Length: 86
Image (cartoon, rainbow, N blue to C red; front, side, top):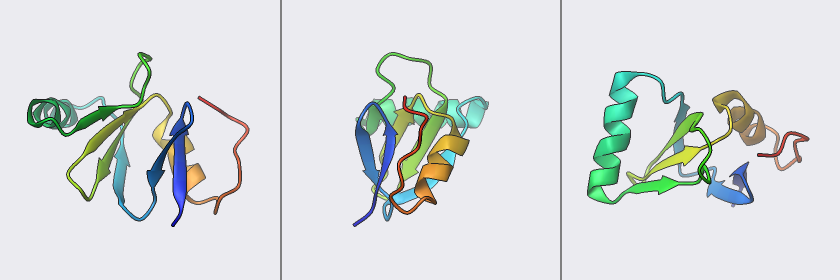
């Protein structure tokens, strides 16, 4: 099983990850609020500004302080460590 570091030592399963998106649009903000209302939101941003929203196949929504591009690079790096740590 492969895990992706999403910052601050937090990991998500690569097999369960559906998408990594930017949190800026109104539909994404609604998606985050709906997940919060349902109790399916996981805030892994540690109080920092949310820069990416991860959608999981378990219907969980995860907030991260890392850029979507950084997470995508980590997902494609086959376990190699990145220099940029959040």
